[in-house]
Length: 611
Image 1: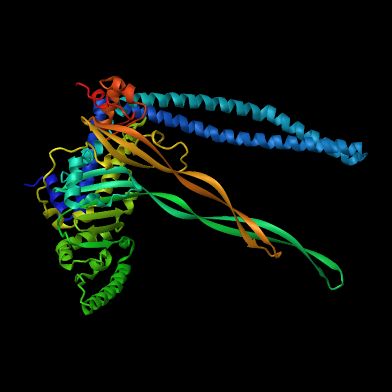
Image 2: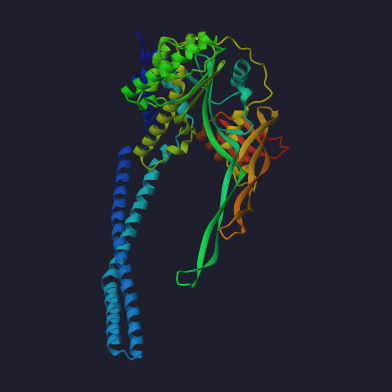
């Protein structure tokens, strides 16, 4: 009899959308809850006691908030009384001035009215509002003090659990839930060698991009990389300035009088100047030898947002265009042929495909069914993905992955409330799994990709470096940017890494931070005014000039979770090493990265500690 995991894996190979809805979504949530329960039990946190403390804290905060609303009303009354007293003082002074001017009736009326307002305002404030303010402020202070004590107690109760959280648990949970998705601890040189040597992965490396996040793995032996890059591009910015000019003219009116007319006009001018722009882009890159000569692109059209009738109209109109395109291709001796499934051809697109035989080999009826289900699904992300096939490399760019938080950080789960900590834990991990799964889903929808196992690859025996460029960029981007940014930088930094040498099991890497300085400039642009003269309109703009800074870092695989590493660095076997290298460091994916002196030679030895 087939187990739940085996059924899930089998469904994943056949119908990934159904597999997620009917198995993986719930299974992953259960695994997350089971893991959290295990941590809570290990920590010894008394959940009910914590809930009582949190409930008492929240009750005190609600009371303090209600008192705060009351204080606002009292302060409003205080302000009104002050206004009355100021108004009374003004009236009294006006009355005194009127008396000096021998306007007795008005003077006496104003003086008495003013004195009355001041007296009433002062007496009401002193007798009523001031005591109420003082009393309420004191009550609120005591309530806030009690609430702070309860909050401190709640944090103390949760400390054992907060200390147990680990940043790399997400990958463990995904491996447990979906064994078919084999995730790597980090992007190692063997995985890069495989991707690059077999599929040409590195041929499109962008010198103006820096890796912010990276996740690698494989499906049935076929490798993938999901990365997020900060990309720099030069563009232009239009700046606008203006001045207002004035002039006069004269004319004779109907009565023969000379009349002067005053005129004004706003003169504007613009200049266009170079400006750097930055954006982050997340993409999934998947290598598979199936259909190696096929190239195509498809773009999202959000078919999930259309009603059945709207989709039918879209397919009907698109089908006419496809038949016309097919006819024109036949007349011109081209190779384009419709798939016979107009709904798929229209909604999936990929009409720029260049190998009809391999396209049909890839997109079988089952693949078409899976992809249409994915595209039309209203519960998932729907048709939000761009797909490009470039020979053996497949690229997925999705709108949801642009919002995906890829940073695995144990501190994100910390809380004073066990229920809030659980909610944070479930929310982050479920979003992470969901985003990754649905980036892979278009590829999982193609059965041939799961049936195509890669041919054996001959790896090098030794590699000159320990870590890939992607991993080194990820490491430095997760450190404090002040470790690398030029002091005069006014923009974001693109951090590029250059391997220098290997020292035992450590890599020595040069980091270059590329940014721009910003200088305020003014251009004067001539504009003709309505007065018949040329005027110089100042246009303020910013000139961006490149600036860079270089530092050297060393990287070493420690292999501990972030929790265990920090524990060892604070008071364990790495304490002495941290005292020497802790001035600028980062730790992630089990890899330590430290800023070092240019000629440092002790790093590998210092961080090699005996168990």
